[in-house]
Image (cartoon, rainbow, N blue to C red; front, side, top):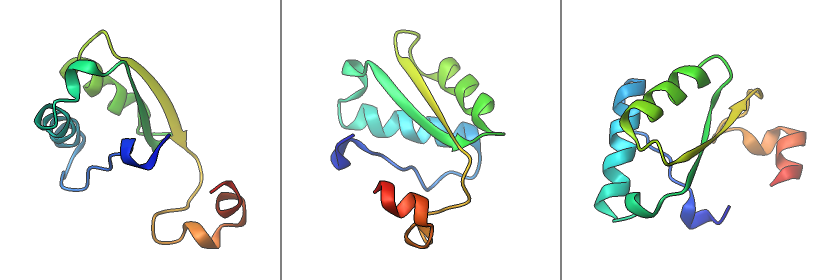
Length: 88
């Protein structure tokens, strides 16, 4: 996935806000109407909730690709994880 195609929403305080802010971001940039698929990345225990909100608030024509994160790495420590840093 090209870097310019990755969007990380960091202003929300809950899942619903995250979905609504993400949709607003895509609408503001006139990207929403051309979306065919979205890759969702979240913790494994949170993925079902994220997918449910996306399906309710986004279009049914969008294909959702769910990639639950099972590692403990984050944006702050990814380079210290030997498996993750080799992938990147």
